[in-house]
Length: 324
Image (cartoon, rainbow, N blue to C red; front, side):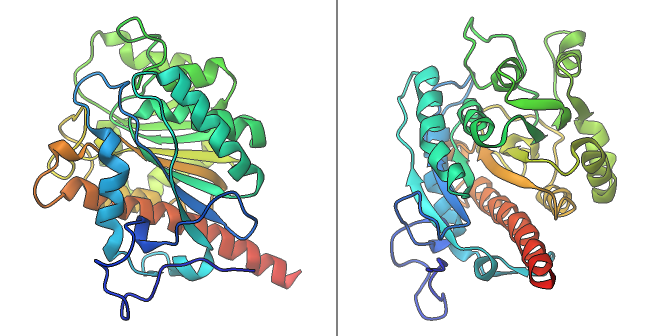
């Protein structure tokens, strides 16, 4: 069985070859010798302010060329533990969020049915609805771990029900997620009215607002998440705007007073061992990033940590299988 991993960077310069995530092999999917696949969804016409996230997958891939196999904080060789590929970008329909959602669902289902865990690079946050539909088709209602400056639970935006500010309300209505097994964290910034923060709670989500999240230790955050989510199939969605704009200026709806990258990475690492069945990283908008591409660089590091979470879980499962 083939084990997919990047070429040795000490032999092949990082700036050569096809520009995939972490220089992973680009292969057609599904297939049964792949543990996880990085998938781009370059769609951003469901944004409410600054566009440009359609270029997010390309920028994150470009910034990922410096990633290396061993994750010292989690003590795992990500590329040796997992058979990883870059599955390229899915087809989208610009200007049509509903159709794009259907395209994402239909494209991801065969991967999930083959046991492949997708890491989706967006794209605006409307794309998560298609991802959750595919997750539900294979795993049933999943728990949700959301890190985001916004809850994305509006009834509609500009009278549109399918928008980057509405996907998690739609997901509850469609029974795709189990709010009783879900935690939203990082919400901050001005609101339209005081009741805005009540909406996700009324839908059944546990909410940790941005100020409380910043004050938490990684262990405190992880304890809250683990107690709520449990051991069942769980989806993790990371909106880059949960980071402070000083670290992530390249995004569509920035909010001040967010997390620093080291804090976000520490929160993620504290979740190691959980049963994640899929991930996304959304709302990276390269046109608003600086010359140093700091947003894309942070996004690539976060994406790598998401894969590391999966590597830790797979490594532990294999150890248990070897002992039995």
